[in-house]
Length: 293
Image (cartoon, rainbow, N blue to C red):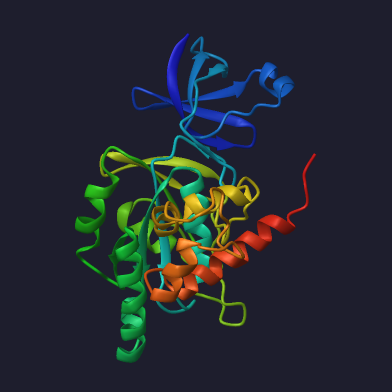
């Protein structure tokens, strides 16, 4: 048996990479019986006789596993958000950030279409950029035909497994085409009536780029909080996590509790009011979630 990484999953087949070659494999029935499923990004043991399909025999322990898109052992996510068409959306950004933090995936925010905004819109956007940088997030700003984009992104990709994510129509395919000219994903002109991009990516694949691996994920536009418990939400907002250590009560949810350091930080402006409003909304969604059996 040999060890390799699953680079692609399509129609029940898994493609493992060995010495620059992709070998088509099936997963053994034992995984189905255990309710397990191999994921792109998994390190696996497989057998292959050189003639028929290979067989995946064992899945090695995972560092993490995302649900949508189904991918394992992710180091970081390039979160692509546009300044315009669709407009920059902090609640959607925070939704992505919270879920990525819960999976221990490092988010890197890429802001596209900066050439489409007015000076006034730029000023407003800059306030948000400063806020997120202060929290500790890396932000890359880009625009149409940005010749410096590769130089900005290449060092980030090196040696990492990265996921590309973001709202539909924000420029993910354009970004991928910059990184991988050979891919030439068909970029759809935004359907103005829907405000969504026409091109949607259909399977999960890890592609070698800039000395790292990049997953082009199916074009999902939001995460839900299926895997986060209400007590875990604070840890998914870095500035809440830091400040909550000064809350009077352990397990403080920062809503009705007295002597809550987080609510105090919202009053003083140390935590932005919109971030707190998003936290309250996410908390309510988690509380209202129907239990799954």
